[in-house]
Amino acid sequence: MKLKVLYALLLVSVCAVFLIPLAQYKWSPRTELADAIHSTAERMTRLEESERQVGARLASMSGRERKILDIRGSSISVALDRHDEGPMGPVSAARIGAHEFLIANYLDIFLFDQDRRTAVPVQIDVELPVWNPTAVFYSAFYDRVFIANYSGKDVVVAQLVRDAAGPKLHLTERIVNESAIHGAEGIAVSKGGRFMAIADYEGNALSLFERIDDQWTFRWKQEVIGSHGVAIIGDYVFGSGQATIVKFAVESGQEIARTSKLGSDPILFATCLNVDESTGQLVGSDAVSGIVFTMTKALKVIGKFGANGPSYTNFSSPFCAYRDRQGMYVLSTYQDRFVSIGRDSTTSYEFGAAQWGYIDFPLGLRNASNMLHGAAQFDRPSYRMFDKNVRAGYGALYTDDGKLLLMPQRQELFDGDSPFYVTSIASNSTWLVIVANSSPRALLYNRKTGELGAVTIGEWDCWAIAAEVLCPSRRYSIDELSAEANLLEPEQQATAPGRLTEPAVPILKYWAAWKLTQAPRDLASGN
Image (tube, rainbow, N blue to C red; front, side, top):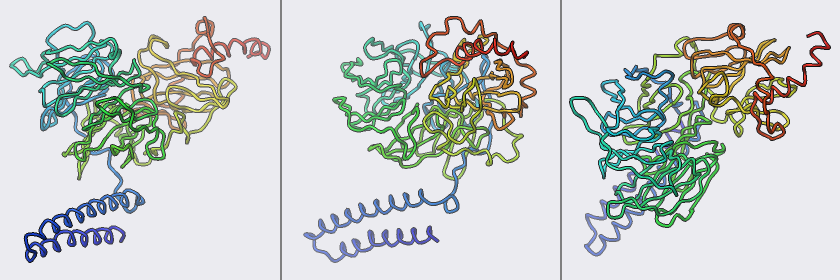
């Protein structure tokens, strides 16, 4: 009923806008025509405001009154040409044609064709000192692809060339600036080609360059902690990173506005920010919370959806989101999928094998967007570990006395090269199993003996639910995983334990120091 009333009011407004001025045009003398046009413009402004109000009311309606956005969609398998192991892990995309995108994943750049359902690596035609593409941006003005080459500490500019051997990138320019480019994660070029903005993660800054006499000249930089996303709209440049989105004047670099909120939710890590081509506003994503959002140029949230979690009814670290006149596109990184959300349907382009088919009721696993309070998972149980209560979070376990037990990072656990990001815990009477969506390994903690171990599951995008671990191909029981666990020796992990009194401590070091203090008590009790 509310929908019918709202649309009826909107229809009346439309009639008032168009029919009354037309009558005036027919009988008004020439001297009154300008007044009629002015009156029409005022009514159009009021109509636009009415449309915005209707949209806001629709957005605020309950789930029964408005359609829940489908982020699962129908699945389409993409033929992927690659040779390395693990997920493809798409983190950035740039539309270069009606149905073609370039996609970066920190290792390579792929040409993704929606119609052909293929993704092929695109090689660059020169040997660079380091090739670590983290973001791609296509400028139609220059007909060039701008690539943030993260560890290379530069920006690579290339032309996409197609010949009988296949597509390749022809290097046309390499931008190096020791003051402004330390580790670029995001890049944007203004529509008219005058400005280029770089989100420099390692430098914790947003930097702006201006094109002068066929050279990119450094203009200014401003601090943005964890700088990762960037967009240029008219006179303004927008940057995003850890806990913040900021608006600057493009000419001067003066800060205009800043926010740390997505509506009522805190920004955790806004890894991506783009121009919403359908509205001229902003669209982006928070990879830590799994939220995709749209936002005005005044940094007010228009809408948001999604969360990290198991199955395709959730995302898994969506590093980037885009919207143009054809729809919205989300890169759900650890699910290995490119989600195309149109007006009437959703399509999930999957760069790996079709997954999560064994879940009978996936909607039951849909997570709320406010699952995290800060980086800790608010609506998840606590467990006893190392004589403390702990709760899973992002990259760490959070203790009841305020410590962060940092999860294993690169090369820290059995020569693993995959850090733990979104962390979750499963339990039975003997074991705790700690998994993360970004690692094929799990930590295991024996609740009776205090021993710590690890096991290789072999799948990414795994989530702990109650007494099970749900992975894309199947469920794993705790007994199954614990039977394969390799237990760690505390003496090895306790070498130079370092700052165990600090608020944030590596979990392996903390466990080793704690375990060694328990040894005499264990021996005395006969355990």
